[in-house]
Length: 251
Image 1 (cartoon, rainbow, N blue to C red):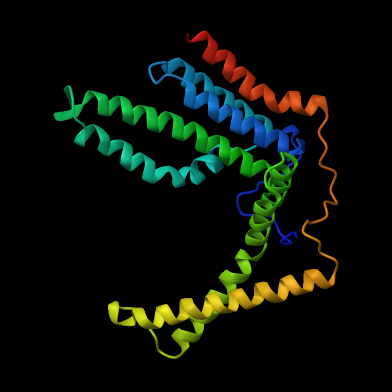
Image 2 (image 1 turned 60 degrees about the horizontal axis):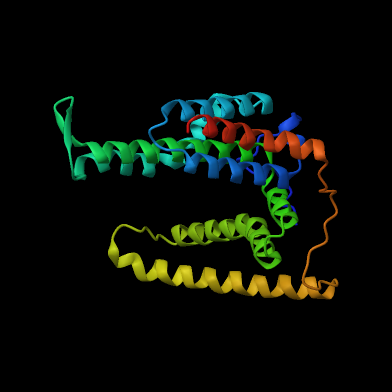
């Protein structure tokens, strides 16, 4: 079920982080996120220590800082929301650069920004060192529901196919002089979306029948060896274990 090429978020490499089994990295990132969320917002140095840990992982994986920073654009909505909280928040207020801000709002904004940023960076490092299909296989090894994993696999595999179909339909519209300038073009776009849905549904039916004819019985075969050694588990869980030790020192 491979798409035949690397995903744009994946950064090929042969580092110790790249070679770790995906289930180890998934569990490590999940445990690290739990530790970050459990950290009191007042413990600034703990968040700084978490950032240093992630920087160490990035260095070990050979993931450059500009690569991470470019992909942190996904966090922009959270940043905008966090900046609004002190402005519209209630309670005690303070003045910063001539602007009256809510003190509880400032704490809430810091809490969101710090924890969201660390979580996003950890996710970026996971995606940069693990191919999407391998991540899903790792989720399967962690006993996540098999049906959900297979749905995600097919979505990943055929997303580019559906996008190509949508581009062809757009080119066909524009070659006939169509331009979406105002609300009067909405019916045309709606019919296009309906046609795309029908084509996708029919493609899914054909793929399912083709799979059944080849012996599909509800689960996909795993060709790649996904077992993890004790050493690999230890390397992966060193990140959340160290973060947990930092959290313990804050109490």
